[in-house]
Length: 257
Image (tube, rainbow, N blue to C red; front, side, top):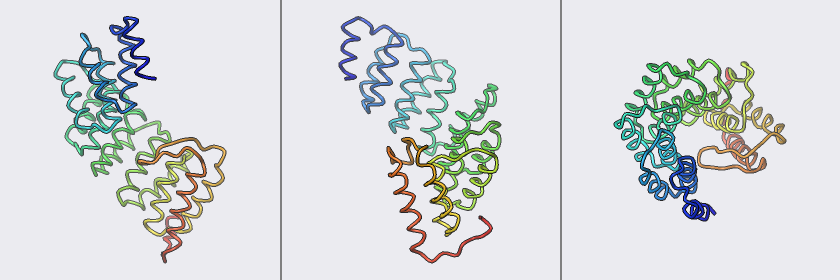
């Protein structure tokens, strides 16, 4: 269908329309056809910031982290100042590559330009630092985000949980609840994983029961490399994690409860 639409664009002489080409680049990127997307990008006579953003985002989204960073550097060499979308995409690539140097440069750039440390760029920085193992920097950024939404909390909780800092993940989850932010399915899976790691059986049971009460509120979401399209898929994962905990003899840390 996408290629048919592209054919219609060519047939109707719309190849010079920036908005149309941007849409085609995004479409091909999301369909894992980054080669076609790059061909369109290279054929553009005059690329604006949106053009660069579309291609960099496409690379980063599809796992071509090295290419995303290289294109970002090329954009900077041509004198274009990156915007929020460019920075967020490249931060994802930095995390995948473990490129702390560029990630730290981006944080410095955000500060120097007086850009707001909102949940969008704040969460991207937290994810990047978490993937690179710099949890002090991740927590510093987290603490600096004034208006934290569930995505911001998830970024920090996930960073802790996926790197063995289970106590910190559970503690932050408690702070999230106390602060009035409702957890979503990603939060619950990460926290239950943290409970399984340290044997917090009672707290894990509470998480499992809490999730079961949210059946009508669940939507499709991504957790790691998995995509859940139905509530029962989420609960199956939660049940597996909880069952794994009960199959072992754990000493429950009551200080976490």
